[in-house]
Image (tube, rainbow, N blue to C red; front, side):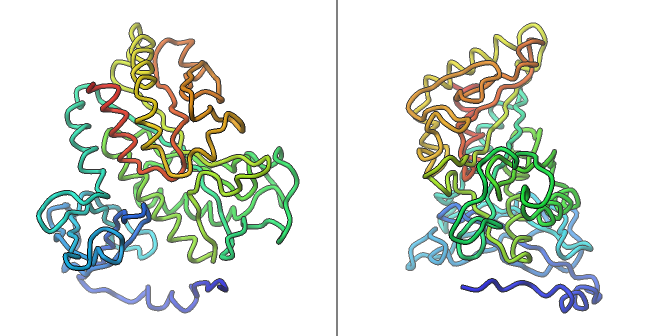
Length: 356
């Protein structure tokens, strides 16, 4: 299929037309395959409170979220952000999915994550997620790679500068600025080890905000990539053969206890022991295809074994050198794949570390 790029010169005239008092609200949700979906509604006035937004619905039989004979799935708004594509007072809305009987849809990990976060609120869990991703042409081949061939070996691409070392920096910069405009707590970007692979970081975010902000940042990336005619892949290992790094979503975790001098290291060591005891449960929730990435090579631990260490990027859980030296701070769970559901992962970490 040939790439069909947008025509911003034609669109700009219509975007500049006055909307009157009306605004557009784009509802965003996670479907039955972990993909993002969206649809837009018109609101009569500027939205200043989440309660002003209506509960909406969609055909869940078309998104692998419901059978055809009972296909209505309901969207309940939970957070909203400024819309960098439409500008003005238009907004992007994160919504949870509910079945017609009022129960959370099978895809609604946010519902359970929020419960865990509320139960652990006294420990004030904070998260930061390092979201790696790959850019592909519409034919599925890595963006910028020679067709039918391969670029030079890994080495010059990580945090690289210059033609032939980095690909699609213009898209990456556009995404960064769009996140800042929207109000996403994006904290940085960098080119990754494999050419055409990038990373952005979101956080630190408190409790449920982590999932909301990462979901919105992902949406913006995929949405903007439409305009560049390229595809964003969150698959953890787009090239399982060869000496190419996979893509993860390293999850940094801290709590009031781990951030407290004098007791921080002991708190982290206790949490890491709990994570080791539940290793299999976490791996099951840490992304599809993760077994292709967690091989013990390319800066990963082996999926079958839990390990931890200081400054060791080949371990399951890493304590940064400076954190170990000062005796308090955060640890990094390096097991999550790039295609995780952030609500599922952060909720499970809280359940294991703080509620068990």
